[in-house]
Picture 1: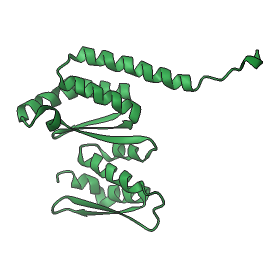
Picture 2 (picture 1 turned 180 degrees about the vertical axis):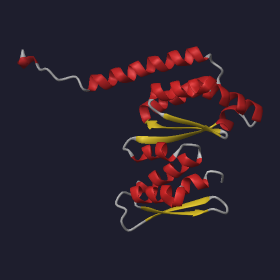
Picture 3 (picture 1 turned 90 degrees about the horizontal axis):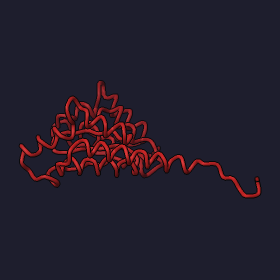
Picture 4 (picture 1 turned 90 degrees about the vertical axis):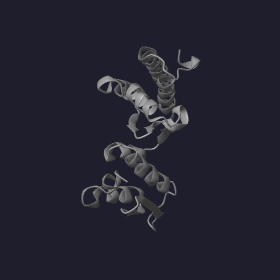
Amino acid sequence: MERIAIVIGPNGETKKKIERATKTAIFVDSKDGTVSISSTPDMMDPLALWQARDIVRAISRGFNPSRAFRLLKEGQLLEIINLHDLVGKSKKRIQSIKGRLIGEEGKTRRIIEETTECYMSVYGHTVCLIGDYGFLRIARKAIQMIVEGLPHAVIYKFLQKKRREMKKKEMAIWKPFISEDSY
């Protein structure tokens, strides 16, 4: 409910931008916070409904709209991790985990974002990620390691190793093909 104003944006601009980009119609009930998304005659891509839904969900889970609009790019996904599912409903335990996820002066969150190229939001009892599937898996694993209580140094080392592996795979795809005939 407290994020409805951000979903709508100043003079309705954020809502209009989502509607234009996805060719959907969005109705926001500001009394109870319900958001309804429907197709329009102009909508060509049926997945646009899911894109609009995910953008609204990302904003409602703490992302600023400019980060949420990354979901319009092909291959970008939203993942929402419910901390209640991982550590129970203890407010004290949730606060402790959130502190570990963010880190001192935001260091841990920043390292996860930089090494995985994913955006991360810690809001309420959730951790949300926006990124491509390969890097989302790595970020999710790092979050799981933090929840399990592993030292941050171990997690940072894991992230660096996985980043090198992903970049190596990325580079291997683009190596030029040299046939035996070209010698």
